[in-house]
Length: 302
Length: 266
Image (cartoon, rainbow over all chains, first blue to last red; front, top):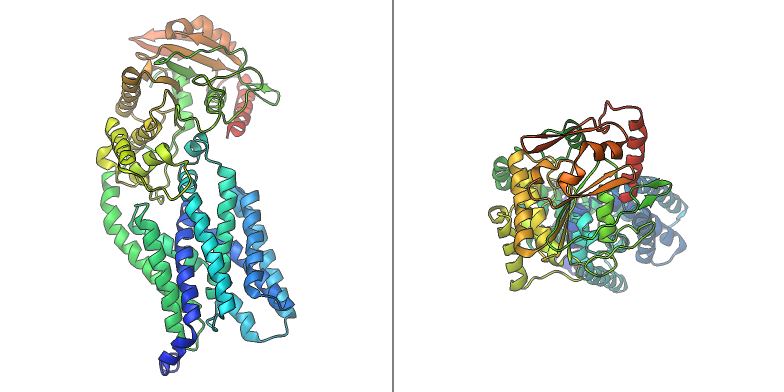
């Protein structure tokens, strides 16, 4: 352990990664908010698929010598667009993702194999890096974050409606298809942001885990996104601060912190919702049984 | 209304008066839920016209309250009862969804009307089927609709909850003159309050008061097989309707068409 961590010259190092820290805070906010809908819409697998294509885009950009952030955004937008267009229903969506994901990963590996540059650049795309985010890159990231936040602010309420209660939402005139595509694109942008910081393999730790933890401990539509954002920011920033004193990549720290938060929330939720669950042990089955209704009609008595 | 070659119902002429209670009956796949979807404006009619409160059907009509067919609420979904009702009120609007005190009062009032205040803050996934159904009705009534569409609202409820739910709907109709279209397999729980019955079987239908429609002669004609309708202590008992797993071979076609219709209506 002595060689794993070294906090000598920590202050000086910190100065070098100010931009990365800002990026982590932005990512935490975006990831925490988008993550709430990832949970409600059951799109965890989509997050993974998007990040793999984002990785392919970034690797392609690295190979071509263009902006890597731009490459990862293009890759994830393609994935998000396809997922939004082709799979409104969860089952269709998952098979689309299952087909896209290995293809994207394969492309990314191909691009990296062809790339002749520094090995650290390659590895960083998969597992994250804290090599100083330069000011130009930070501008990109901030711009994308603002777009995602603005988009989420506009569609928040109808998206929640159609995600949680699709039948009534459609009857009320909520455009389910358009919202599905809009959210998939915003999710793609958030995924591209996350790839920059934690790497493609571990995007889930910022887009899924914090919101999953938050929804364990609260059902409040206000508290859940706030907690989710807090958890994501703590994970991302904490991960960078720990990684700075070590020779290990950033991602294990981020994933460990967010996992620890999730564990704590899970334990806490047992106490909070356990009591409620006991009370509501349904005497009446909540699952409709179509055959029961048929039998009733045929027999004429119930 | 038709899906491809299959006609779900034809020549249906129905004029629903304010405060009228219409029960829609029929076997699975007869097009009962599809009728609701047409009224909601989600599915176009193959031919004919439909007006809801003087307007052509279109989604987003706030004059209609809709209680969809019940399905189990995901226990992992941490949506509170009052949030579901709030969505019924203003969930379609853009933005973040901050509510003013007036909106919150309306949500409370809707929950109080169905007796769901005590679990307004509980996650829906943890409520029982009967409790969820109360919340659903509060949601449908939050906009103060002129027409309430309920798709099998009594399905999978025990007798006590069936009565509670139908009483709630009946009170709403009496106090606010809300028209009700009530899709159901089982007419007995609502027999006392039903004004008219629409019975749909395989493209044919009968419309009228329960006493007019629920006769052996009518149902035999609808099902095209001898069906006996008996009155047993104020309950209507239908014997011989071929909507049974062990029914005659004609049943096989029905079942197939029914599945098509369900898919089309989703």
